[in-house]
Length: 311
Length: 326
Ligand SMILES: Nc1ncnc2c1ncn2[C@@H]1O[C@H](COP(=O)(O)OP(=O)(O)OP(=O)(O)O)[C@@H](O)[C@H]1O
Ligand SMILES: [Mg+2]
Image (cartoon, rainbow over all chains, first blue to last red; front, side, top):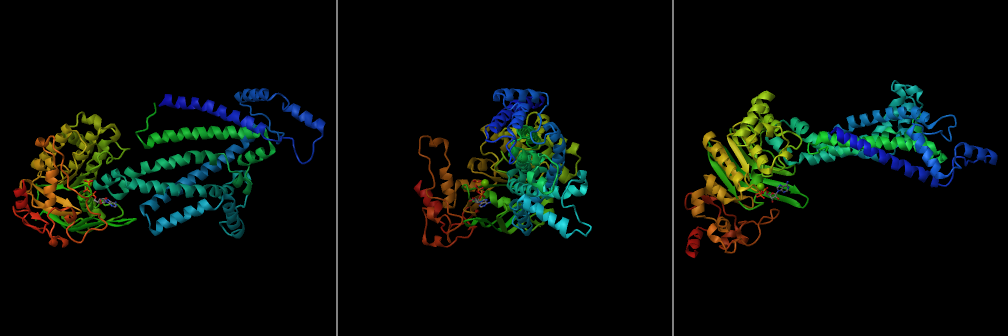
């Protein structure tokens, strides 16, 4: 088990390196550069800037020095936010995105999984159709529409009532300011989780061993909880791994709508601005989280299924 | 009063291409301590008859009729009443023994659950009783096996675990669905001995569903022959094996290879079993029957036959024709 863990972490390093390398060269191959802007910069200043960021060195040299700095936990200076290093930007933005994402995924699990189970156990009844309807709505309505809708309802229409919520802004992470963005983030995941859980639960309830459990005279609840649930959760975990990695690194749309100082905005802005170091930083962070979540998923498989061995 | 009294049991399944009638108007009774063999081709409704009796039909299945057991009608009993009987007074061992144990639960715990549920034992006491039962079904090293997951056990062991589990509460009725199919001969013999022991020592009534007529001959007191969801012949084992009264039973017995058949071409019953979605109005076996007459266009009721059994066949002269032919 421990040697398996160590091995997986070690394999993560070359994976991460490969991602860094591909991303580094892809960024540089993309036309345009960080200092192309609408207002032309005088050539002398441009030359100065390029020299300061070593953009005139041979590419391989830039690459090697970037790697070298990374090893020292230095993600380099941001090209656009000139007074900040990328490390600083990530340190500011990531905790915000992480907290919101984590809250959202927890909320989605707490609501979506029981919804899916309830639907599966009452297959083709009004309850089932209601869940399917909610799930379809959650999947079909895009984030930016849902976010605006919630703002309209709770921020504008209910403005003078007790359930009024801020229409946006972060207010240093006040609870009230987190509610709408977290709900907006969570809703599509509620929908996906309900659908996935429903499907796998229906399948597992038809399994021979569930029939055996019923034949033993166990109450229905015990059959579901002790005999069906664990197997039914396997596809849920498979979905949750990448989904969590995705949501933890922030959503550009949600963070923009609610004006949240998270990391999601940086990624898109960084890409548009050719802010090489910022994009690299956020990419490395996302990749590391993805690798970690995949490892977590594989460990959870072992909890759900004793056939999975780690050696 | 009979231990088990099945009256006019009909089982239907809704499928995307129409309704399937897997069991049709089936009736029989069974006494305490008796072993009833159920034989018939694949798809003849052997398993679904007892799935219905135990309230274990798939979601798309419905059963009508009566299944009286210990003063209760199992088809109309509520969930609570049914759960007090299942695994306790009536237990079933399923055909698909490779997949019938929960993969993520240790087998000892799966067994202990039954005793905790029906006998109110503590977890520890139930575990000990489960291990004792594993010992009784001759599983070597039962303590260690109890701590294993199903995938760590061979097919034969899983099947014995299933049987041990079914016997934990000393049921009055044990339904064993193909308990020996796909097991090697030594394990088969072991399981059959075990069933015989349970029947004789505990006076447990056993329903033995099988393809293997040899198994029926060795264990059962009576045998019911099923065809297309109906019993076509029912009676004393020795009697039916010696003088089968229904053409289908005759065919079935003729198909069984014997040691002195070496070198001969195996016999089969020609034709196919009927489509359960469109059962013919008359005798379901008639299209394959060498003795078909005009009367077969009407459904023959199950009626007394020569030798004291029951048969569902319009003709009475088949046994003699057959004897003359051989
Ligand atoms: N859930 C279901 N939906 C539709 N048809 C079903 C379903 N379950 C069983 N059947 C059908 O019912 C018929 C009887 O099945 P059953 O399992 O009782 O056969 P059997 O006599 O036990 O056969 P075998 O010897 O192969 O076990 C079969 O034709 C089968 O296809
Ligand atoms: Mg069967």
